[in-house]
Image (tube, rainbow, N blue to C red; front, side, top):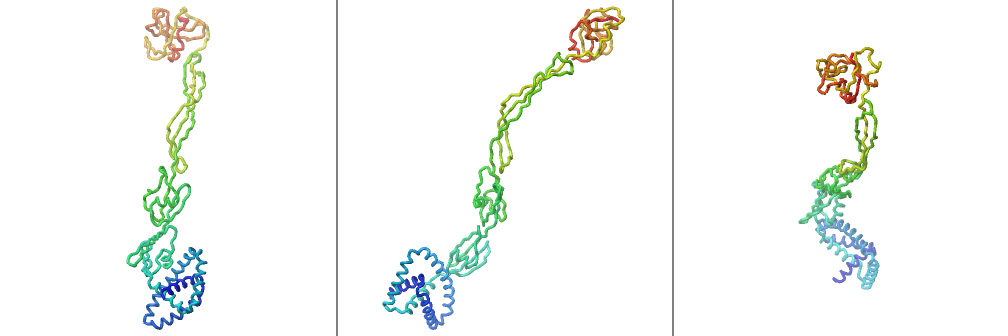
Length: 413
């Protein structure tokens, strides 16, 4: 009898898979179940409640398992069909009634359902309990389906259970925006750190890059993270080197006149900088080397020191004078007082009193008449003015140097 029961169980499973005899099975099962219910009416309520719960769970489980089995067992379909046909011939040959087969199948199914473990499932969402129910299937997909829940991108599902109670913790994801490389992306996470958000966005942070938040900071809803890319390099540029202007005095030019003796020319030098860029824009630069590649050429300007005479010759000599003395003349600049107390200024000359008495009026000019000092008064003396020497007073030291030493005619008026 045990052997027949096992055979019948296999026949029932194969018949359900192949669909053979499904209508006959259902009619027989209904008839037998009604007969059984009449005999076990005192237990009908309890059995009915258990069967309803078990049947629903069993059907769902059977459907899921059947779909999975079909996918994995397609190669065995031919063998199952063949086995079912042989079993059917066996039943007909031994004249086993359909009622007996149906009774055995139902009894086997009831025994399987009754031995299934039913557990309580408590569901918490973001720390708050939102549902609680009893279920036979306690995989993630079945629990979510029974609770009418779905998981979005980034949601976390965690399940733990002890003593017949399963606790499900669902953490809902929140948005975190990351701005990097010229674009802003949003990722959804239920927990983690800034580094986790970067990883989910497919971004890496270099050693020199700048993060708006430390990588280990915990995430929060609506957090905005900025990743600035830092790069560096060297930049060289050529700049001009200014030339110097050198002034040289010359007696070939009159005072106030200038002449460019040599044109100035700018030089060149190469400056090399270490440059730091943030997001492609320069943020800082540091000079690391400077090399002169072309020396500048000084500009040379000649400055005249030759003094122009401010006097014009009106006649070769005074019309009335006592005598003319040829003397060696030098010049000194105005300033201070003379030996006679008069101011040292233009029109005063220093003489040797033994040759020209102090207070004498004189007229001074060069023999060729090109330089005419004009009328003056002998009102000063000097340590070097001895004999036939005369020292004329001019306005500036430059004029004195320009006059130098000359031979002049001194007219005693």
